[in-house]
Figure 1 (cartoon, chains in turn blue, orange):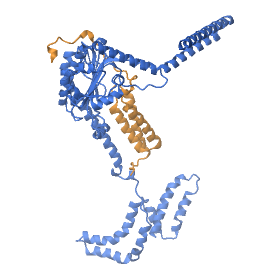
Figure 2 (cartoon, rainbow over the protein chains, first blue to last red):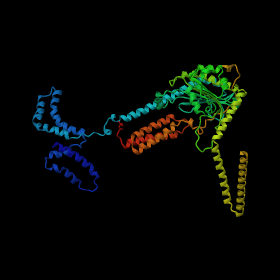
Figure 3 (tube, chains in turn cyan, yellow):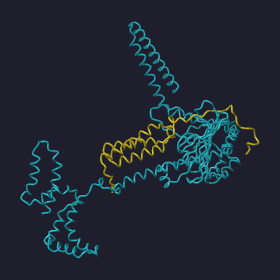
Figure 4 (tube, rainbow over the protein chains, first blue to last red):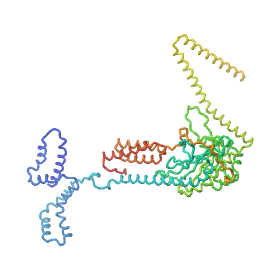
Length: 479
Length: 106
């Protein structure tokens, strides 16, 4: 009977909800009455119970109803445990309940339990934050990212400042302009680094003999990006300082030379336009010239290597071999090879006399601002190289060789692009013809039109004759 | 070192101004990460809004944060802010429409 009551309560609650959906004014009262129809014969108590009972909210509320009955049986024992001082009368009352009233009930209890369906409260209606653990995880991740951003940004900034503080004196004694972002009207030293990114800082120095200018790039690791930090745990990398000195034409003779770690040399030989064209041989081991085995040398010709690798240079390279990634001197520097699209007429890439230095900051990522001082001797080497390159001149033989190399490279380039340039010329000629025809068509005066057409025809005839003459000449020559 | 013995190498009359390198001619110099992350963030937030997927919206928020961290200082802050706002709105809308918490995929 109790099962029936509960089911009806559920249905009633549902019926109450659906009431709103019924458009036709089918007797709502009738509907309600029908619901209660079955109970009409039964004693009033169930009906009253139905009205009184609150709408069931699934499991939590169904269990109290059940628990009430159970409590009656269980309370007995609980009562005995908790209220040791309880009156004997109370106990008697409960025991009377237990023995007489619910004898039959206990038997039906098991089936009662089996047919009841426990429904779970939807998670967002539960008053607990535990169900939102994924969201909390996400927010925590974001907070961690933000924390790492702030910490990483500050670290990079401190490293940059430490580098600048240790190098400032040397730079200011060598260059008239230290620090320029290119935007101010007057060429005055800003005296500070240019922040391009949270991990890249630039410094432009200019106003010195033997060079046009020097661009120093502090390429730190992306400490501000948590993803990058995690990636670096798998693949360690280090901060780099890149120095690019651009020279005027008179500051350097024509040669191409590079020295650096073996890995870097192999990579540069493939990537760099000038190294791949002028230094065709495999990198030679540095041991031949007195530098550690870990360094290898790419050079256009032996004379260049001998000229560059004097005692002081060898000393610099040997004592700081671990910090040197690559050193690249070139009068034909045009950057890495650029992939050209098909059909575009290639022009020889613009070249600039350049000295390019790439240094690794010691510490392999775990650098502290103090490590920046250890890079100062390398900057001395840069200054020394600038002065040296100005004085280094090839002898006559070397110069001839160098000139021949450059002519060869240019010729190869022209050959490669020959077909493309031909096509380009062809299209240009066709364009011209079309433009002329258009002009003739647009000409209103019929007489002038005729005259222009005749002139065009004559020109064409002349061209044909010329071609025929050329062909005849070639045939004669062939014979 | 030797600078002290030699004359002052500085030449104020030989000053050249700084010219930012032209990145159009040399696209290899640029780091594409912030642009990719920006695009990804917008795609994910659109997915999250249209398909009502909560995890899409959260990933969009992450993408826009990563894009911001990697961005150049010369870049437009407006674009950063717009992608950020879009991803936040995707998250908020997903939760307004369906307040249930996210269920893990396992």
